[in-house]
Image (tube, rainbow, N blue to C red; front, side, top):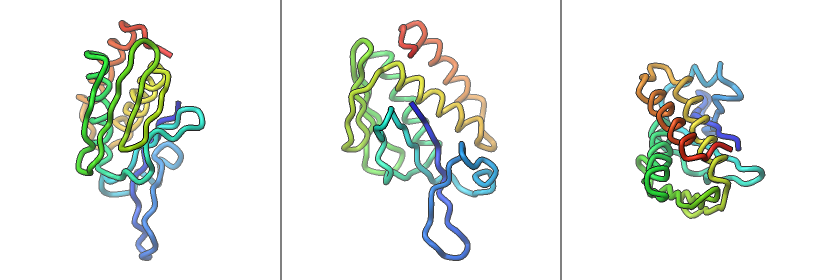
Length: 153
């Protein structure tokens, strides 16, 4: 599972905006202003999040963390994207989960998905300037719940 955060970059020369990975190019990403971006989750060869779902990047990660929290508590969670018309749906039992973002649905290993989301969120909140400790503490609590649920990949 690969979880990657992208920030939207609108070049000063007026060329088309592009998404810049904080994992692949952290130095350039650190110079960008704003928080509009995209989260990409790749499970083997599957793209779990549609590329066109560009929104508030910290909001997307908080929504994904909320989906994981609901899933761990109830086995099912539905959470809206921060400001666009799309939802994150995570349901399942045992080691199999159904993960839906917008209109894209996949069956995945629950442990791999949850650990990928937690790792990607930790990477993003560790990168984000001015990030508060609350998201990192939340991720730590979720990792404890994941271990207790036996979901580690």
